[in-house]
Each structure stands twice: as C-alpha cells, then as structure tokens.
Image 1 (cartoon, rainbow, N blue to C red):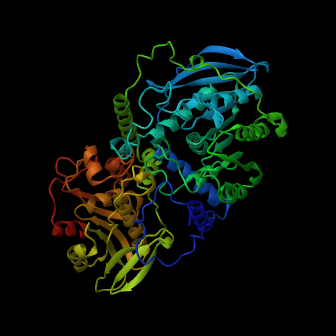
Image 2: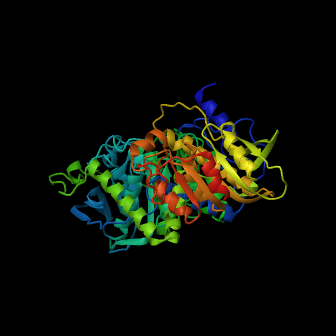
Image 3: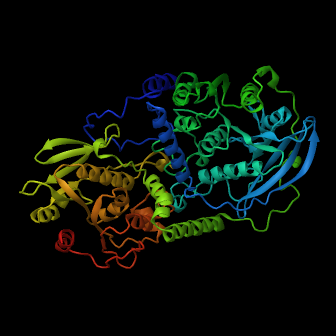
Length: 638
C-alpha cells in the first residue's frame, strides 16, 4: 500500500469524529499510554455535544497553549519603544521599516505596508507571519511572496505588517533552529522558540493597535506553513484577532516540523485541527493544497473545524479552499484570502474585487531593518535572555505566594495542572475493574490507562479513614507499610504507577508524549478520586514512599479533600535544574512553580515532608531526616 493510500485509510477511521467518550466503557486489557506519538501520527477530533461543552474545551485549549508557551501567568509587557522609518511610496501603498522590543532588549523586526490615496483611516490591519522560506519575509517566489501579499493587502486598504521569525533576516538574537533546544533546562522554565514567537505575535498586535491609522477592532492574521501555525496559535489565544486564514497547516496528519511549532507539552492532548477550531465563532478560512499534508482538508479537517462553529451557530463563518498545488501560498491562495478578509473586514462580498494586481518587490536594502544601522546597545544574548526569563519567573511566583491563596490559585493552579498535563477526574469518571482477591484495575474510560491496585480492608465494617499508599515499585512493595495501617484500623489502597520502558530519539518527544512523571501524577490523582468516592471511606490521606513522595507532592494540590499527606523528599535538590532533568523531568514544571507552588497550593492541610536533607526547600516546614514506617503510621493515625 503506497503512503497516500495508507494515510487515506488511516484518516477514514481516525479523523473526523470519535466515539462518545462520555459514556463509560471497559478499560483496555493493558495500559496503552506507552505508545509513542510524533508529529506525523494521525489524530482525530472528538465529538462535542453542546455549545457549553465546546466553549469549556476551547477555553482549556487556550489555557494549555499559553502554559506551554511559558506565557501563563502572563508576563509583564514592556514598552514597545517602536521605531518606524525608511518610508518609500509606491503605486497605492507605502513601505516602512520597523523594529520594537517585545521583551527588554529583544527585538522584533519587519516591514509596515500602508495604503495610499484612501484618506487617513483608520484602516483594518493584517498580520502576515511567514513560513520557513529560505529568506523568510523577503521571499518572493511563484509558490509564495510575502512582500506581494502585503502589497496586495495594502492596496486593498489594510495596514499590513510582516515580521521576522526568530533567527531570520534582521532577527539576530540566535539562530532559528538553534536555541533553546527541545527538552533542555530552558523547557523546564517554559522557555522555547515556540513560546517566544507566540509572544512576538502578541506584541505585534500591540504594535498595530498603537498606530493611529489602525482600527483596533478590525485585525486579521494570515500566514503559510510555519506562519500558518503562528496564525492559528495566535488566533486561539488572542481574541483581538477578528478574522484568520491559516494556510497549508491545519492538518490531522502532520503537526509541524520545527522547534518554533513544537512547544513543550503542547500537543500531548490537542492537535492543530482543535486549535484552529478554538477560533470559533470568529471568521476563519482554511487554505489547503493537494500536494501536502492538507490534501484531506475538504473531507476531514474542515468538517471537524466546522462542527465547533456549528455548535456556536456560526457555521457560515468558516470556509475552506483547496488548490491543486504543492505546499504554497501562491496567487490563487492569496486571492482566496483577499476575498475572505474583504467580506469580513471590508464589508465587500464580491470576490471579483480582490484579484491581485502585478507588483514589484522592493530591493532588500529598502526592507532590511539593520541595513546601514547599528543594532541597539541593549540587545540581549541567548544567555542573558534566559537569565532574565528565569529571574522574572521567580519573581512572579514569589509575588503570587505573597499575595495570598486566592491569587496563587488563580495563576498557578492552571499552570501546574497544564505543566503536569493532568486531568482531574470526577469520582464518577473513574472505573474500577474488579480482578479478584482485592485486586483492581483503575482507569478513565477513553484515556488508555489501566492502573493496577490492591485494596487492603480492615476487619471491621462501616466507614474508615483511608490512605492511598504509593511506592515506586508498586503495590507489592507497599504491602508491608499498608499492613501496618490496616492494623491501626485504616482502609488502604496501593497502586502501581505508570512504569513503561520507552525509548525514542525524537527531539519533539515531550511535545507529543507525556513523561513518566506526568503519567504517575495522573495515576495518583485518579486513584485518589476513586478512593474518595467509596461509600466505606470517610477521611482520605496520602502517603508517598521513597521516590513516590515527589510524585505525591505534585499530585496533592489537585485532591483538596485529602486531609494528611506524608511524603519522602529523597533529599531532592529543588534548586537544581540538573536534578529535574535527570530524576523528575516535566517540561514547564519550574515555570509552574515546581514544589514551591505545589506546597503553597496545599495550604494549611497537615503535611509531613521528611528526608528533605539540605536540598529540598519547598517553602514550607520539612524534616531533614528520613522517618521510619512506624513514625509515619503514628503521625497519620494520631
């Protein structure tokens, strides 16, 4: 079977609508979460039943993108200090050079195209992020012309802006595919090329809204390939984008092949089609091509996106076109975009008014920002920027903790939850399959998990205090400790957390796959929900033995009903990025406040952290020495 036929077969069964996952079903015979996904793994859009259900999901998608970008909690916006200069006037438009600071000392560079002969405005504005052309925003080929597109928009009455991806042309801070690397210490802090470009796009909107000739309520965005990714990502997280046209990138079979499209944790539970749908009900045009991964758009991706629009009563606001061409943003594609934006931003529904006229692209010296000009003295290096990022992150966390529980929970509960890629299930959403001899399998229908568990019951009936005991080697290793708790009159549940051997060379592994720690925290939260829902359980406690103590501390903020928590800190060094990379790798965890946010979110509930040594400093009281099992039992039962 050739590749095209294979993909068509896969899509016929996996793209569009999946089964209704709200209906409980049997757990899989084995935990299937160890299956490795990558950017080319076919994905599918779930079926959403109501407007409220989709709006809740869309809000979750936006939140997840921002956390994965390192942009939740939102960074402070520095002054843009924009400079616009080098104006040249042509037939129906002008071109200017622009640079501004998206962060202090971090520069965005590009070109501003304005309409001439149409009065003072205000005009609608159009963002034009570029794809991975060899010369970026300067590319002028038959398959795509960034200057040509901007000229076309300006002649039609828009203020159009194109700017450099990081590392292209005038963007000099570091190479596009160079820094920060996937999976390194920077990803622990939520610092990624994907996040930086998302922030630059947000600041481009700020810049355009600052211009007196721009109507701040009529802003559109369109880009191709990697610029298509920027288009639907920005549209999903920034409601100021009123109309969007992502080109050749809303695909269910390829999610993007560059660091700038693959942020930490980003697509573990979402994919491009769902992100595109998050724009609803704002008007959106999907532009596709027969010669790339968007070839199935008309029969698969577009119907899936339209299903979200239909739930919001806005099916007439989304459209799709597909051209017989390779990967592109050619004249046919541009004219389709011109007509769509003309309808929604100019109020002109006649597509014949938006045919592209011949254009001449400026020589590069008229477009390059730093041509004959010194770069700013305050320009950041990669190293200085990373230091500024971590310093700002630490200050945000400290400020939130100082502001009190409400402020902390508002900003850091979502950050920690998304960093852990955690679903907090309701008790009714956890299924327990009885395997006999007090052995169970726990899981969430449709999620692929199957968590082995053993229930240890006291001799007397009625309601009991109950403790979830987690040992890194599973319930069998936890049995001696569980027996001591049962002897004291408690009911005990012990589980085997996720423990699959997964080997991969994929540099984007944690964009698409959860880490072992993320799965283990999920298993603990799932087991706590089931335990709490049992009729024979009163108060619930949590104990993490050996390395599992760290997993339990990360899980505890998401089970507020737990009364007492005892956790072995295994002398983990909370200030060492190397320690997280080697022992407890979770992308964005340090940006999310790590154990300091977790401990603060637990609040005043009884918390016994022992074996902390000198290195484990979560911001709450700890015991340096390792406690024995009898001491932990005594603390739990007193």
